[in-house]
Structure formats: C-alpha cells, structure tokens
Image (cartoon, rainbow, N blue to C red; front, side, top):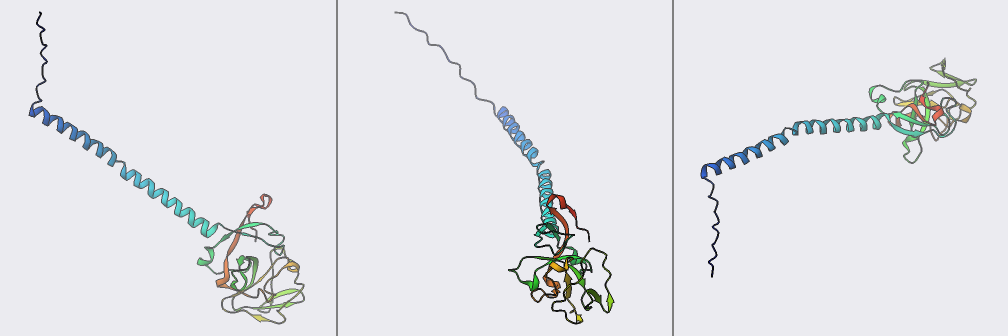
Length: 215
C-alpha cells in the first residue's frame, strides 16, 4: 500500500506587534478624518437652517401684517372697490401712525366679532366736529373738499346736528353714499381706534381690478 503524504499547511505567522499598532493607528486616523469631514459641514448646515428659518419668519410677518385678505361686501365703495373684490389689509401702518382723512380702513362695527368686516373711508378725525349741510360734509364748520369720486350725502341718519367725535373715534362714510351703511347708521356709528383692523391697500381679485387701491 502506498503511503499518502500529508500536505503541510503553512500557518501564517501572527502579525508583529509593531505592524498591529500601525494598522490601529491608521484606522484611528481614518476615523478622525471622517469625523472632521462631516463636522466641517455643521457650520454650513447651521447657516442654511438659520437662513431658511429667517425667510419663513419674514414671510409669516409679511403675510400677517400686509397680506390679510378681506372681501368687499356691497357697492358702498364704488367706484374704488366693487362688490366681491378681495383686498389685502395693511395691519402694520397704524402702529406707526394714526388713520388719516381719506384712508380706506377695514373694521368691525362696535368691535362685534360676529360681524363681517366693513370697508369705508375716514372722513372725520378724533376731536373734530362733523355736520351735514345741504348734502355736503362740514368739518369744524368748514366744507370738506373731497379729492376722490363720491356721491352727495342724500341722508344724514343719526347725524341730525353737529356731532363731536371722541378722542379715539373716527367718522366713516362709503364713497357711494346712497348705498352705504356707515357712521350715519346706529348699527355702525363712530369707529373707535381699537376696532380698526387695518388699511385696505391692494386688490388681488378679480383680475381686472388687480392693483393698488387709488385713494
């Protein structure tokens, strides 16, 4: 019988301690390099997040203070605004100044939260005396010169004599006075400053009325 020779399997010699330390050092260096690489992106990511957050906050403030939408109900502000027009309200402007004569304001009569928003023009300012004479408006005894298109005062409503406004009250009328419910009516009356939502400044709908409101 032939004897089968067993092949000798050469066993790999264990790595020397020196080589093992080099290998571990290399692995550690690679890990540190990877960490530094990813950490280098943190400032850039933080700046990007900060910018996006800033843009979002800015957009929110713009919409909140300048982009609140209110629909015009009725034809009391013809020809400047028509029934169904959707307008943007500037809520910021009256934090910087008081409403002026001729401003088109948005408010809820007597602060009634269940009421729809009214859009009217400021005629009388706080402390002034308002009176109607022969279909004309008089402020402190002087006839009011109106530079915008409006109709004559066909009725006086509750203003049967000279009316003095309070220190925080505004007298408002619609431009189309024949079809307007305004400060001449008991349900509306004089508008207090705290009830004013803001100033109407831009029409966004319908398309043929798109643009700034001409005062």
